[in-house]
Amino acid sequence: MKKKQERKRLGDLLVEAGLITEEQLEEALREKAPGQKLGDVLLQLGYITEQQLIEVLEFQLGIPHVSLYRYPIDPKLTNLIPKEFAKRHMVMPLKVEGERLLVAMADPMDFFVIDDLRLSTGFHIETAIASKDDILRAINKYYDMDESVEDFLQMAPAAETTVEEERATEEDSPIVRLVNQILQLAVEQRASDVHIDPQETKVLVRYRIDGILRTDRALPKHMQSMLTARIKILANMDITEHRIPQDGRIKMNIDFHPVDLRVSTLPTIYGEKIVIRILDLGTALNDIHKLGFNQLNLRRFIELIERPNGIILITGPTGAGKSSTLYAALNHLNSEEVNIITIEDPVEYQIEGVNQIQVNPNIGLTFAQGLRSILRQDPNIIMVGEIRDRETAEVAIRASLTGHLVLSTLHTNDALSTITRLIDMGIEPFLVATSLAGVVSQRLVRRVCRDCQEEQEPTKREIEIFARRGMKIDKLIRGRGCPTCNMTGYKGRIAIHELLVMTDEMRRVILNKEPFSKLRELAIKNRMIFLIDDGLLKVKQGLTTLEEVLKVAILS
Image (cartoon, rainbow, N blue to C red; front, side):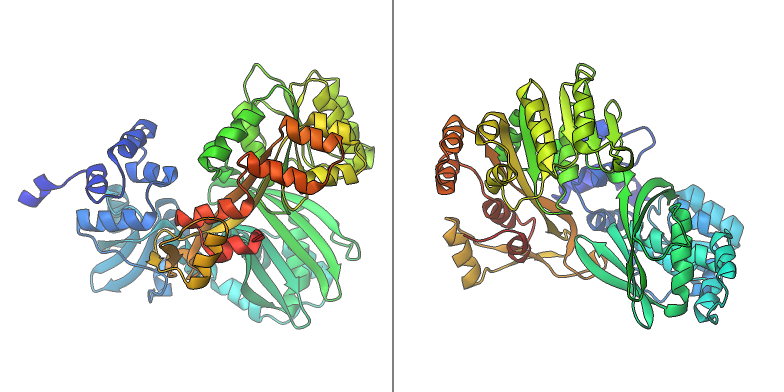
């Protein structure tokens, strides 16, 4: 009995283990909503990883920890616990030994659930701890791949399209379950896109996770038309039209939270390729302090967006997280004293208190046209989704000269070349010089998995690369690969930035049409941190690896 009295609270154990500081614990206790678990708050704040939490719980409660990645689970046990119950309470049946049923739980302290299980199954329940991701992956693998989907995979090809259409709309048909399963798995693995690629003899389902595409499964060719029909029905597209590209949108709830899906089809020689972009409305990053800016850049960026007027551009290729940065900036500025209006194509995340307009070229509502109308609406801050042509650029620049703050995105490779790009678009240099306040160029790199990271000695080449940018490196952090990160060594992504703040000297260079190299000299003099430097600093902090940084930034 003595052990019971000595049991410490989770927060104290985490502090003792050196995983969090007293300050972080106090902050978590302040943030904690009634009924919310401390461990969940610490996970949300990013102070600990799920793996670290499990290890401390394992030590505190004396309950074993299981990794379900390669666990030999008996599929017949899924009959004992209904899928809804398993998902809601994060439990997974593992094995039966005589009168005992071993169950993996994310929270083995939930005695109500254990009692429910004991009464409903008639077994004596033994618990083990597993991470939420692990349990979700196992539930999807063993519950969803039920016999009907298996039967469907082995079914002979359907001959008539009418049968396909009927099947694609019946809520309980195998194809409906298969599509739901593909989407569910994508959301759980935090994929940003799902690719359905038709090939000559099969159809591949691929997920883009942390920027890298991976094939998840290959489906038989005869399922292609039904799969396409089902997705088109969900996205309100024309299922009889196969020859032209189409766009659609699906709003659905996956695992109890809302997800927005943008669907695009493209006719290829083997049929229609479908790409589904997933916008998880629950994980929209709207805090400017969590975007990964280093201290100097963060200070400069906040000063920039708090200006009363001028144009601020965020640049980078597709999928570099430009929208997230824009939304975080708007969120920071959003208050009842200002009128914020955005024009986007399409509106990705809805922000309360912001007037958002969707571009519609079919009725003549283009970026430029919408912008002109916005200016008559007495705005303080305007966000233009993207500057695609000279007309939009001119209206945006004129708006910024008449006392508005304009935020927008542009596709360029780095911050400095944005200036030449605007001049190439046909904007007068004096307009660029007077209106442009600053440019942020950003890329996304994969983050080292915190559960399997380990220190390594840098190689001669790596030391040389750091030396070329005037930095020293003693140790590098890399991920070994573990079940949490799907054996990749990376989990999640982090942004690297380059921030150009316009100075009077730079404006003079632009007005006098002096060479581009002069601008670069002034930027260096102004202590601008280039993309490669910010990347190397993040490698030094152990957040990412050199390979990731060199994929997106040029070493000059």
